[in-house]
Each structure stands twice: as C-alpha cells, then as structure tokens.
Image (cartoon, rainbow, N blue to C red):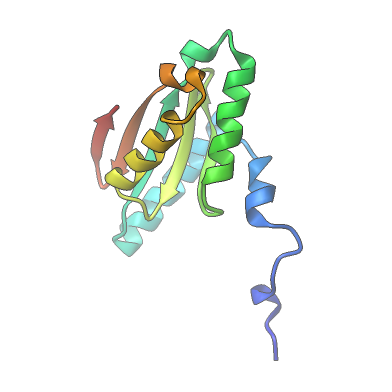
Amino acid sequence: MELKAFREPSVSPRNNQRNTLLHADMLRLLLQEERERSNRSGSQFSFLLFDLKNLRSNQAGRARFIRDISDRIRAIDKTGWMKEDAFGVILPYTSASGARILADQMLGGADPANQTITYTVYTYPFSVYEG
C-alpha cells in the first residue's frame, strides 16, 4: 500500500520555490521556526544575508543574482527580503562554513555586478561571519 504523503509531487519543490520570495515578516517567522527546530533537534542552521544596496541602480543584475541563488539552493532552503536591500537565505542543517561556500560561489561567478555584493553569515547556535 502506497502512502499518499510519499508520492512524488506533481510540481518540483525547487521550481515552485524559485517563485516564492518571502516578505520580511514571513522570513522572520520561518527563522523563529527554524530556531525552535534547531533547539529541539540539536542541529544547526545558517542564515545568509546578502547586502544588495550597490545593485539599487542595476535592477537586471539584482534580478539575475536572485534567480541564480534560487537555482542553487535546496528545496528546504527559504529565500526572501529582510528589508529593501537585504536578501536572506535560510539554510537548515548548514554550518557557517557551508553557508560561506555557497556565498563565495555565488559572488565569484562571471557577473561583475556580483563583485559589489557583501554578505553576513549568522549561524545558530550563534556565530557571525562577515565576508
């Protein structure tokens, strides 16, 4: 007997998530939920916050960066805006070094606009890295 909950979804979670950029209140709520999950399970997670203020006048570069991140993350990761120029990625089960690897790969690409982006990694239990 096959359980309906374990069937393949009709929509890919990755493709469906690409269109879901959360607003700040929802992203904060998901951060709180992730913190509670982490407390219960003892696992860590990271929150990657990109500062996109240098791309204000380059909307195409900003949109390309967000699309590229959406293409790279896992189905369990969540993305959204913390404020106007701060784009966040919640990375469950991810260490600070794993988050830095993702950020450095995103910023090290061929797009010169990405060279103006900075980021901060927050890891729970707490640590902070600015790159």
